[in-house]
Image (cartoon, rainbow, N blue to C red):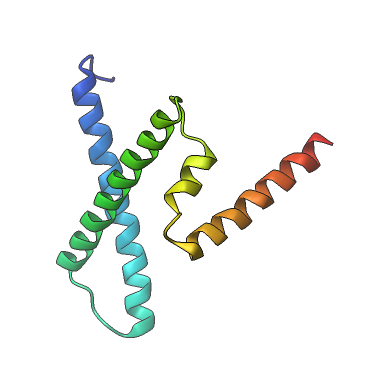
Length: 110
């Protein structure tokens, strides 16, 4: 049963997300470690998880700021594309994916 305290619910959700991130990063590191024939310590996995978590938090703040600056309360694809302005490779990949999604929407719309 959910708590009546939103702060506790938020903390619980954050911990679940961090745990899921740790688990999935651990899986990816294990796969790469096996392929490369090296070992990764739990400390390495924990440090990598903290680095990724910090990047996620920074990205969220930036996206919220871009939307707010545009006078919106919702993040749009334009905000995500603005985030990629200094990473041409990422911008290219995301543009390709966006084009695929838009083509699929048009195909379904008829």
